[in-house]
Image 1 (cartoon, rainbow, N blue to C red):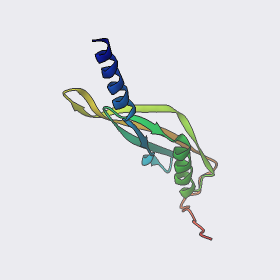
Image 2 (image 1 turned 120 degrees about the vertical axis):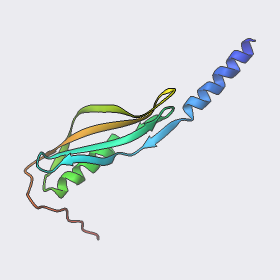
Image 3 (image 1 turned 45 degrees about the vertical axis):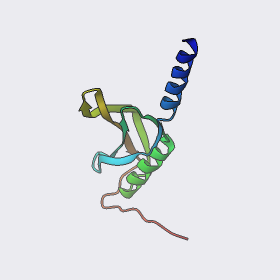
Length: 116
């Protein structure tokens, strides 16, 4: 009986560990006039997200650069919103982080990409 409990625990740990999922930030909104960028990713019920915050900051800086700003800073933490409620609870959650563009924005600016 004791070995059955350990076997069950071992299987449960493998299942939970197997649910770690790499997530990438995606631009989901923002305001050019306010100099804000909103990035998000979705998480399923049993997923354990692995998120690269440096990738998010790079994306936010790129978005801000298209508006002529020199950089970006995170406002703070993240917000989570259930986007699909199932009978077992929240099945899909949208995780969002806001960034403030820094520097002086240039109206009408667009990003220039140089390939060498």
